[in-house]
Amino acid sequence: MVDGFKVSTAVDDVRRSLSLIFGDGKGGYPEGAYLDGLQFHNLNTMNEVDMLFEGFDDPGPDREWIGSLAAMMDLREGTNRTGFNPKKERLIRHIGITGHWNTAALMYAIRRDTQRVLDTLLVTVNPGDCRFLPHRFNAVATAKAADMGVIGMKVFADAAYYHKEAKFSRAPEDVYYQVGSKELASQDLIRYALSVEGVSTLIIGIGHIDDDPVKCQLEQNLAASQIKTPLSPGIMTEIEEKLVAAGKEKANAYFQRKAIGLTPPRNVGAEEDSSMPALQRTAVRISWDTAYAGKAPIERYDLLRNGQVIGSVPHAPQIDQQRFSFDDIQRKGFGEGLLEYRVRSIDLSGKTADSPVFTFDPKA
Image (cartoon, rainbow, N blue to C red; front, side, top):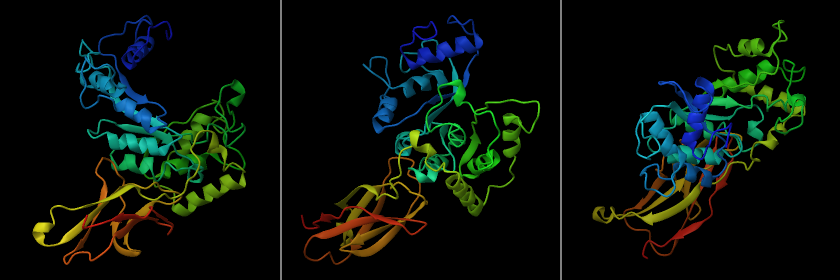
């Protein structure tokens, strides 16, 4: 039971919310009522994403178990493919995902969304992001490429940049009543977040309203958000340095995955391209999934055969199941012996990360 309602499915939860917001609070809601946005909150693991998408491509009322996304599509489109919407109501308008710990899981969810039904991503956006596994160059960049709206949260690290310990707020004393601090101006943090490429809007908690506009968090937040152009990279770096000077560079640690730096490409493999024999040439197709960026965005991937660079592929956010690939072609064959391949990630700062060496026998 939740709020006096029997809630066993995500659909029950939507109807409970509609009743509490617009209806009689007892299960009834007026015709035409809907939620403008529904978000699947805090996806942390690949398994959670798989659960969400279970049955999405092949829903049906006879399935033993189905993920919530398929049911929410029924409520958005006014269909009843899952059997949970017999009246074919349209109860939601937009669907999104959220998270603040594991940017890799959020990227995976976007790749799983082959029908492009996810409208928004709600994610941490603040100057401390770059000191952890960053969302800015990973999930945010991927969502932007998938034409999703990006909603920034944790702009002040839930006040951990100010008065409280690095922990989730659970008590009245966790609420911050001031406007910024001498060390970290709130307007700097807001303008920083709005300057991250891909960010559409911010959700900022309000702890204090005051008749004096200088002391009113709402008025000051609105004023700070009126920027005509994004901050320059240099100014954004200065704000990141202010965070360090204030001793708050580790404040994201309670909600964001620790830094792992630039990673090698994932799931690297190779196979002989069967289309090449007719052209009297031999080819090995090398393929891989996206690397994860560290403090700088990924620029490209270099392909190495037997220790030598043989080509490059530009990086772009991977928004679907299509893998990066490179064809190693030699018209006269590859000669004798095994071929040793690796794929190297390279970011804009010049950092590199190599995949493990793997071998391929073109004569096998």
